[in-house]
Length: 202
Image (cartoon, rainbow, N blue to C red; front, side):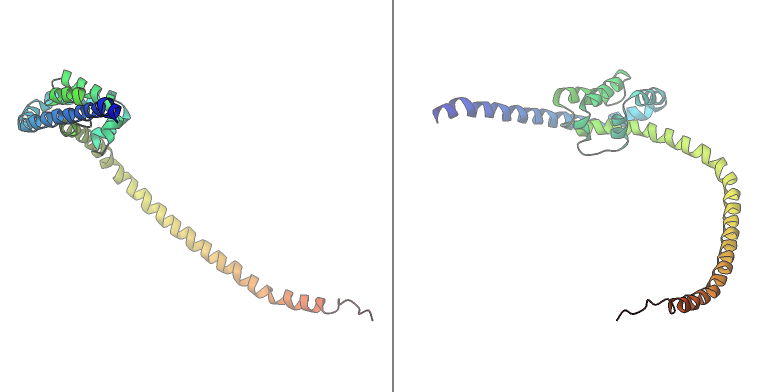
């Protein structure tokens, strides 16, 4: 019992204290970041036009996992791609993207799972560029396509109706003669079956 108290328990305490210190530091970093969110938002609005092209370049060069995390906030997603998140934030901080530098520092120091708030704040700002870009791509092609596609669909549906009606008429015509023919062969089979009874052996 003396060995347990003197050696093992202190190691466990250090381990738990280390995690608690990490959590406390991350909580303080998140709190200071939250206090400065308004400033980051204002700075983002001011630099929005300058940053858009550069941020899109970084986003396009990033991995599919980062793209998914930036677009949609999912629980536990940061833990799976923590190194990629750090690299993405580092690239953004080189551009002086608002809020990315303190988010990157906190991410490197405490890990992305402890500072999700600041990271997702930066990702939300980045996603505004992405959504705008996707909307532009989606809006341009459909304007010309529906006009051309609509007449084709109308004619094809009319043709289908005509073909279906013709097939139904043919089926009705084909089925009716078969029904008339079926009683005659049954009578003939009955007549043929009766005389071919095997002779009785007694």
